[in-house]
Length: 264
Ligand code: FPP
Image (cartoon, rainbow, N blue to C red; front, side, top):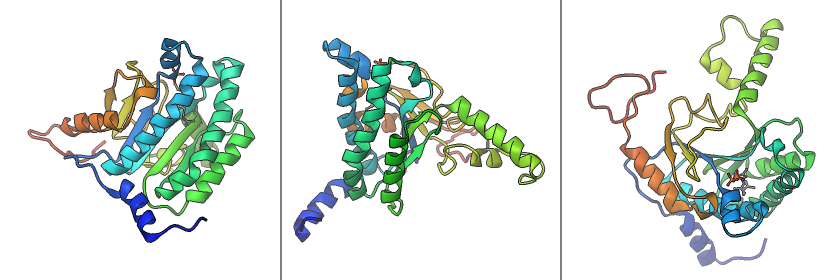
């Protein structure tokens, strides 16, 4: 590592330590980074150029999440349905996920970010899996933001995989008695993540698109009419502002609820 002075180290840390204050900060934010293709088309560019422009937005949002005090940030980078795209776009996205991880992992490590992967192995390029596991290993001991990249992720198949494994584990005696929500959650790809508090989708579309269905059962939704490459920390903070004004009841009924307790 190159030699850095005490001042330089503190300056670089300072950039990420200073906090943005909100009355209520969601612990777990999930984002569907939508609109790269439309952003590119509007400029006469190719779709892949839109994805390239999405990288800077993502880095800014990660920094914004750290400053806001978000503990978990989970993004939809490639879905189990994205294999339906043209072979060229799929190839680009596979290469790009690998490239972004390789290029950004040291920077994220320097920000104390813990990188995690949530996704299925079948079909996913082994070189992408290797890169995801390398980034996980490199950042495993970090205690800052937990940044989960959902690559080859889809909620329905995630739940079906869980059901099939539960059936197997019931048969072999690993599970005894009834399956509870807690047990089911442990079989999901996101087993180490808490429920989603704030679910954001960019681009003006108002859909969940098979992202974190179980995990978002009581999430607050914010749909922003901004294409992903134009998205930045200010949009994230705007969504957190909206979130902090919502009344979350988790199915309960309270006269003046501000911070209701989760009750299922
Ligand atoms: C959805 O926009 C976006 C994706 C399928 C890929 C997301 C990738 C990035 C934001 C690039 C940088 C990040 C990583 C993690 C590599 P779309 O293609 O569906 O856009 P459209 O709806 O306008 O067609």
